[in-house]
Image 1: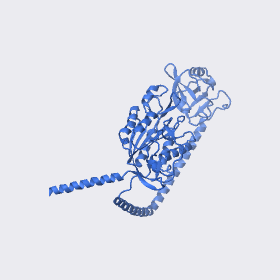
Image 2: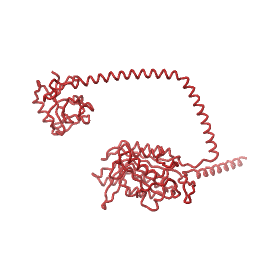
Image 3: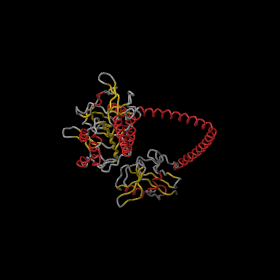
Image 4: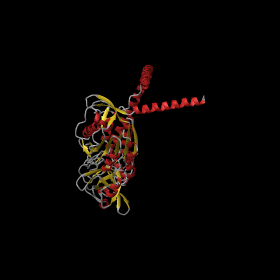
Length: 490
């Protein structure tokens, strides 16, 4: 009896494995394609999707840091996950880590010829000119130095498009699409000026290596990426699916990005789309299945799905009925709360109005001048907030030594003048005030005012009214620097 039980159990396990294998074969990314005879048939394009998403922002070796590429890459990763992609995310890689991630495509997911491979990189790009005048683009990891200062180190760490081309050809997957939110020369690929077909054709199954860059080598990609936003809108909001068939091909996406980004950047950024210069790898087309491209479920699962849909509809109807009843019961309470809210807003607005009136009154007091203020070179400006009197020095470039000498000789209306402290200068800063971010009573064309505070034996502190902060510089520097005198009111 025991032996019979074991035999039945083993038969059950075998049947279960056979069913699982059959379901696995039915799964995958399937598309409806137009055959050469004009008929439409469903074909299995991929077994699954795989994506490598890289964001570089924390540059540390001469390149400007970028606050948004990592955030952008995370958004792309999340969006691809919703489209059914298995995603590997790499954050701020150095040169070794970036190459390892790219080469990993060859030895892992890229070994499966039935997969669709997608690569997204956000970060700095750069272009070098070769001896024959042709250009070679690079994507830049976070540890790559500035090529203008250390070319060898740059070439050791940055990854060239030639290397990327080689990696793409070593990947066994049928379709590979690489998207770079960077600007550099894309000479390895052939531009594709033709408009994409309105239908997915049967030859879409042929191998392809396609590339999209956010701009060409002469352009700079803004840190707030219009390219990334358009990419996500094209896929997740289906704007790139012009014929509404539920699919977006690489060609459709490339054309959509070119039109949208050029439009939204006023023609300052021109995305580039193209395929590899290889006749054996340029006939197919990468396809995004916006409904995750999964095969239809078995009839039993479809029936269960229909049952769940109907049950969901019943629950939604009941939820709506209860919500309507609750709204009717709570209508009086909500109206009362609205009246209280409006009363609070009214009180807040009244308090804001009074505060603004007080601020306007204070500003009028700060701007008050002596009776002979309009034309006299000895104008004294009184600030009632601090009790200080100010006198604007000569409107010309002035070193700290010249400023100090001018103060020492100043005898306007009784003397007692000195160079201001940094805190006193900071108190004059008013963003948007006058023409120099200070009260319009201070007549000067300079942006920087010396303080009396020194740093070491040859430097002094000053306040930059164009930037709104203090810093120090050599005392002999005079560019756009002015002197103000200050004293307590007499």
